[in-house]
Amino acid sequence: MNKLWTAAGAAAWGAAPLGGLQPYMDQGAREKLAALCPGAATVLVAAFPYYAGDEPGNLSLYCRGEDYHRVLTRRLEGVCAALREAHPSCTFIPGADNSPIPELAAAELAGVGHKGRHGLRIVPPYGSYVFLGTILTDLVLAATGPARGTLCPEHCGLCQKACPTGALTEQGCNVEKCLSELTQRKGELPQAVEKQIRESATIWGCDLCQRACPWNQKAEQTPLPEFRENLTPSLTLEDLEGVSNKAFRRQYAHKAFSWRGIGPLKRNLELKE
Image 1 (cartoon, rainbow, N blue to C red):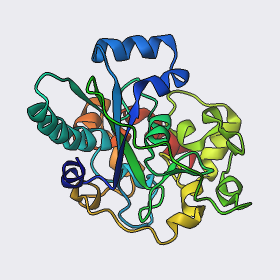
Image 2: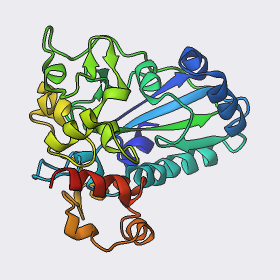
Image 3: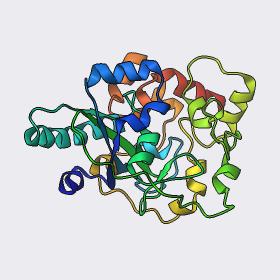
Image 4: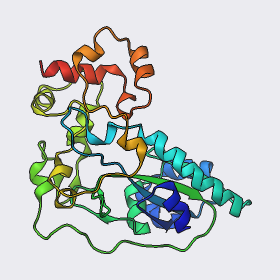
């Protein structure tokens, strides 16, 4: 199994029993999982590093390379193909931020990385600059976790201090206040939110809590070419001028920032004018 995950480019991997995730899922999520994989018993979780340096730009570091949904699905499918060959009577379903599996909880139970105060998984030597991917299966596998403790220095709180909206507290991240979430919302925004975006360095996403994290100060760069090559650090109004939403989605279909269409990005750029 280790060779499979190493070949797929994972920095860490583990397995968690599906039963341990039940408290983190509502009835709707449980039903979706049952439909995806009847008799599901195990969730495999893997962390894929994406940090490619910190070139100045107004797009969050995570979305500058190829869309991680595409990259992880492709790499996970390679693992699934090998597992299907080894276990032909079993089902293996890959997921990359698009399944009902609560990925952070699954990573905790599988022992993949350690929980940071910013709510993300810390996976040395890549820090918290990792994406989580999952494989849902009816194959029963031994659990590899849960993770023990945290790598956060006691009384650090640098990520919380760096959060511009107060979304990060000791109780976790309030997604409704998270600037990364706010930049992605469609339509008109409250004046207070417009002000936060206007004062932000980014028009999509927010890296402030991660940049402040001690574990990220010397994070190694990803070996995965999809996240190292053909980067788009920034967009300008000139880039989007006269571009239809359809043309935008076609031009940037391979980027994670395109999923909401051109509207939020153009609005956010205009707020900074």
